[in-house]
Structures are given as structure tokens and as C-alpha cells.
Image 1 (cartoon, rainbow, N blue to C red):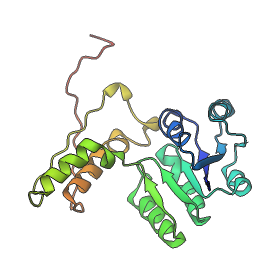
Image 2: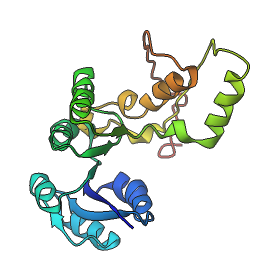
Image 3: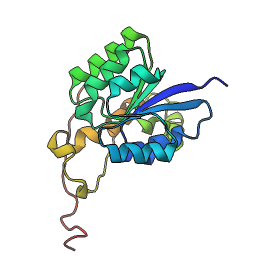
Image 4: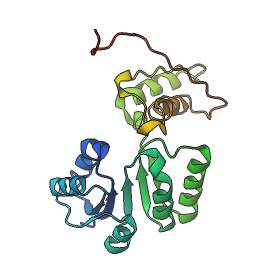
Length: 206
């Protein structure tokens, strides 16, 4: 069986808790290398998934392991340069949301993927939840969707994301925006955001 050679960048929580365990179950995927700057995390993750080749330099990894695809699981403000490098090397790419911290970054990544002729995907996984796909089909069978509302709840213990570089609207609420676009089958004309506490008490002071 021909296997897809996949290189991994990032050894954090999303990598270990969500993506790499799933990748490891596919018989047609070969994990050819792992890169992370924190060597303890790098080695622990590589040991867990049986990855022999380990790097702290992603350029060296991509050159030496010759992957066909890259999983890039980094905080949003670290994504852009690494993503562009992979795309310009004509490697298929998966990244977590949000795809960059500005519209310009996202557009440049999309253009780089188009020029390279590769598949680039952002982890907007709500589109693939069976319940949502069933709901969408039930509604669209009856006609065009005229009104959609999404409410996103996040426990405020989470605090500011990535030392304030990205806030919760971009990191998590983007799921709601993407789901609305997909449910309605239409592009956005405008986006308005509102953030507020629903309850002042927390487990810490209750």
C-alpha cells in the first residue's frame, strides 16, 4: 500500500489531544518527522507516536524527510511564515483555525496554495459533524435558508489567548462564523461581534 508521507510541526495540546492520535490510526499515512522547539515535548510526542526523526528546525525536517503533506499545529501568530514555506515547497497543508491573524495573511496563504496546485485545509470541523449536516440537509430540502443565528459559549477561565495576541473571537468564534457560511451556503456581507459574561460567579469564588 502506498502511504502518504506526512511531516508534523508542533507538539502541543491540539497535536497530542486531537490530530496525531487520529493520524496514527490511518494505515495509509506515514509520519516521517516531527518538529518542535521544546525538546521535552518533541521527544515525548515522538515517542508516543513512534516517530523516529525529530527536529527543532522545520526547514531541515522538510528537506530531509521529503514529505507530501504537512500538519502545522501552532498558535495563529506563528503560522504564516511556516505555512508559506510549506506551500511554496508544493506540499499539501493542514492548519488549525484561525488561518492567520489578519485577512491579508489568510488571502496570501490561499493564493500560495493555488499557485502551488496543492490542497490546503483549515480545521473548520463543525462542517463535518453529522448532526449539523443532517440539520442543514433538512432545512435546504425545504428551500433557501433565509435566517441563521449562532451563539458560541466559552468558559471564561480560558482568559486571553496567546498572551493577548489573539482573542477568543478569532480563535474560537470563527467556528460559528464558518458554520453560518456553510449552513446558509452564502458568503458574508458583514460580521458583528459581541462578547459578554453570562455569570459573574466562577468556581474559584463561588
